[in-house]
Image (cartoon, rainbow, N blue to C red; front, side, top):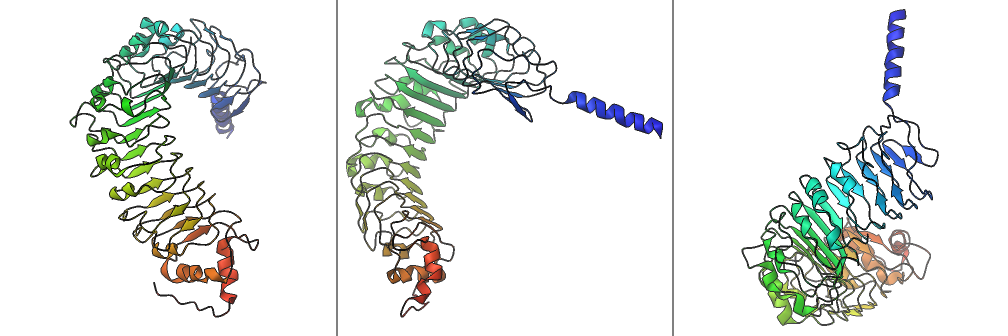
Length: 459
């Protein structure tokens, strides 16, 4: 009996020794995470021996230097968050002791002027973020980029100090995700993506001075997602079809985002990008989308189209030609009314978002072809009378209406009948102006008391 008790105590003691080390005074610890963020720190805290935490959060402090052996007490450290400090120096042995452990390092928004050579010892680094550091193209150190190149698959960089493309990125032989956020360069070399042309799946280039989509795109044969946003010098003339290399290139590309690129028309590049399923054109001045410009997208695979904040004053009639659409976002425009033909032929549309438009009128047959619609968002509009066009939406599951604007009177008894007999799955989010109740509760509690109410309807 004594032997069994002694064995149990030894086992408990062994387990206790395996737990995380004491939490530094300036931090809070929970599970595998040490949170030292937003603490006003000027240096990395001292840690006790045998720390078993996996994630260290040091973001939003005032740290200027990462000293040698800063993380050597950790036994399982895989992620280090150091964003938004004033770090200008990472000493050469800063990562001593965790060379085989650390997989993700986040250094965005600091004062680094070069890719720190200390990173070269991290044998399993897969994600590195140095965005918004004043690193110019000559200080993406050749040796360091070569050392991290075998395993790194996600790299994020860019700032206003970057005036040319850093050619040493060619060493990143296994790169899958590249985010370039900021740059004063106007063009990219044709071989900009050399080294990872056969591995890159997601590319984001934003906030640069590029004047055209780079021709180097055509070489990214495994690219699936392209985010080319907030590049204000692009314009319509900068969306070049040769950048995509012809119909036999980029056959895996499914997602294209061209947000805030100073476009005024539907991009003609969709003459060749037949497999793109999601197109985001938000924050471009597409005041008038003509039939001729939309013709390039007819017969393509586009099912998800976003035209948020595009200065639209009406629903472009040409959209009715995109009969494969399942999701359409028209939020943040200047649309005042929906006419009977606005959504003709969109029989596959499942999700329609109109929020934050001055929409005040919906014609009675506007939704007649939307037989598949499941989600309709009319929040933050000027709608106050429930549109009878809703009668056509027998597949609708979610209807979002403005808050405190809907006239809840016996005139909307038809909606109660529709909900009870034609679409029992419908959920309504919105509230009345005339009475302090949500629309859905008003229908259930008060409509049945209306004079001549009959709970029958012809669906």
